[in-house]
Image (cartoon, rainbow, N blue to C red):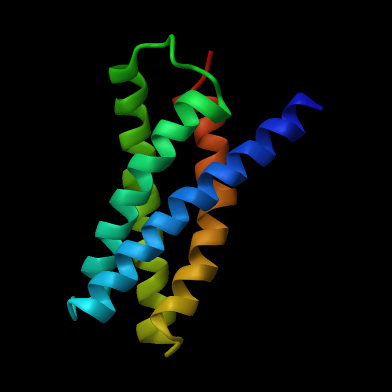
Length: 127
């Protein structure tokens, strides 16, 4: 049961980080007329910072571990996630002509569950 509870907490933290990500992305694209790929990367960075904090303190309850070590490992995972998100949004938006926002939703779900969760569990916040 602890694994299911942790997974649900991770999804709540991811949803919060994703909300920040989307708000920044949409604000940059729609409000400031920024290029959607730059906006995607900056949104991903903002969401990543929120998700790291929540992961460390709420999901994996690992605040006693060295923050700099966790942060370094998280940064590596975040770089991979950002690359996968930006690449996926590019493929769907440019290659398949899907709206950037719909592309971002689809890609975020796949990367969030299939990549981020497991690497945070077994690599970033390991005990």
